[in-house]
Length: 249
Image (cartoon, rainbow, N blue to C red; front, top):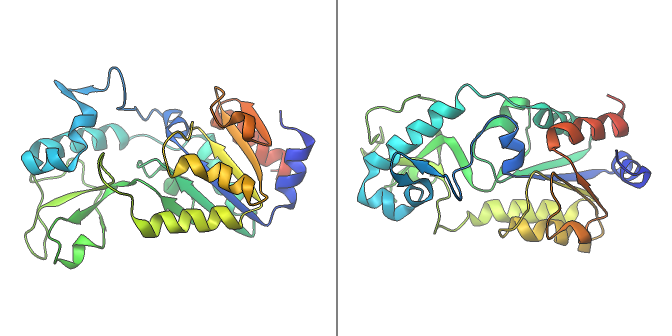
């Protein structure tokens, strides 16, 4: 399935970065809310994932996120998630950078994880002077109640710990992802077209810094020609094969 060069490069790598996107989650049944068909009730779902929507109607936005939590709660990691976690245990330095918010990588056992867009199972206070505005707290309630939820410390509104459309990513999170990318000697981009920055630049940055870069995606992307190897396959199929070939199970 993979070229001998890819297997040799991964087997000898001391520092590995894996970048994952929606395709990895989709194999566990996680729906996407972008594009055509992305409706919830009568709303375009992406129009609710904004700070403006939350300012107008926080209860409505929380109803939407309650629905998403209900969809995600019974879902389980797939073989791709588990292969990444197994790889982490075999590589001296390993960083997983994900665009996904569903927490499935953590459930599968990933430890050194950079979540670019946040985590749906965490909340933070919207009161800028509250200690919980900077430190997100885990909340596994399904459903969250009452709506909208309030901060125990200051009674401010709580919001999902998600980077919404129109918001900037956390600079510290970006720095962690880019630092690992620049230092790695093997980079895997899986289940994403990496069309949005900063994810879009990470595989190219890794290649520029001398890393061996592997793309795994069912379809070719704009990045494919620039990779050392690009395999058109789902991550749930390809990643377990990659782990077995490089590390012998």
